[in-house]
Length: 237
Length: 284
Image 1 (cartoon, helix red, strand yellow):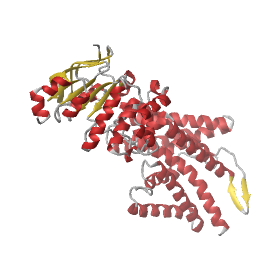
Image 2: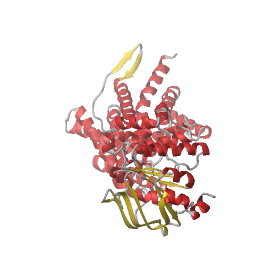
Image 3: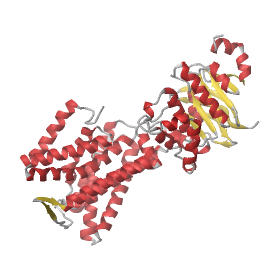
Image 4: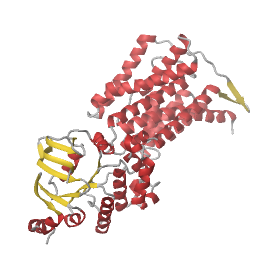
């Protein structure tokens, strides 16, 4: 089992505030890995570090065996990492198609634009119906589709998803996890951060528990689902 | 309809073309980079001097002189960004205003030093054509057509290319575009070059109609700013529409009173409209 992404003793923060302490984790090829934890645990910070939006303060990060720590975000995309940010962050006054087009901005992706657009439309047919519509007018679930589609347009090796279910109605949350399953079925490696512990453990192979900036627990989803601490603190069982 | 009034309306439309082109450039830069180039009209002045120099002094063919001037002003736009805007991108907007305001005085003084204050003319007089008793200047007609062509080219560029899409996207959410592999700095450079090129194109069109002198930017610079504010700063379509509204006020106002008074009218209209539609004529 070779790791596509591996973080070793990564720390990061904002100003004098340290948000991540010696975080080590591995995302194996073809697997879906979850990072769960309470609000403010550093989950989004972790995602921002991996996608290059926030610099590493310490530790190393490798993708496919290559050191990628410290690259700026716009170079990270070319390395094969696509990040679906928290709250989707679509360009609301651009059409769905323009949002997807900008996902294919990097030269390697531009060359395959038409073909990749067809794949995204095949995966999310709703986006094809809405292609000429402004992204800001989409429903919450459709926006999440568009955000995932935009990330897929760069033909990534690793898809990062930051709280895909945040701010969505319960019914839509179920749909969003269905989207995650679809993406997985494409054979893509996924790292997903969620507060919705019960549902995320249904779609990932393994998960890490992040609390106050450190990894507290790690295991397969079956192990974590059976863990008393997780059941009590995060699933309310 | 009074034939002279009709002539004024037509002239207003023709004047609106070049103003709209400059408003597009200023709005593009504001929308994308979030700075106002106070010295924008002075870039046009630089372009007009370049055309005068290449054509009238060096004897280059006019199309070549225009092309080189256009590219030169585009390069000047990049220089403005790299030397003046980029180092203070993160600082308070007032600092950026002061810096580009300083550039205005620099360019005007520099031009005075180089060329003196006398009015210079490229010396091309395009014919006036007469259609059904209405007199229309070919230079204005040409300027209008070229300005419109420039606006269409910009529209197609922003719609159809990847970098154009990135330019529109960055104006909506500048912090997130890196996640799509877009290098913000590169987009800013391309935007500055396009903003410069639009000023360069305007210089080509104005050089055929007006004499160039170091302070010519002052005659239409303020007008372009109020057009942009009237249209809603950063709103390219609003600015485009506002340019034609202001041009009509100036042209028709000039017909009923005098050119000077027409500018007073235009500014009064602007102030009044700012109370009614403070976020721009087309703001929802």
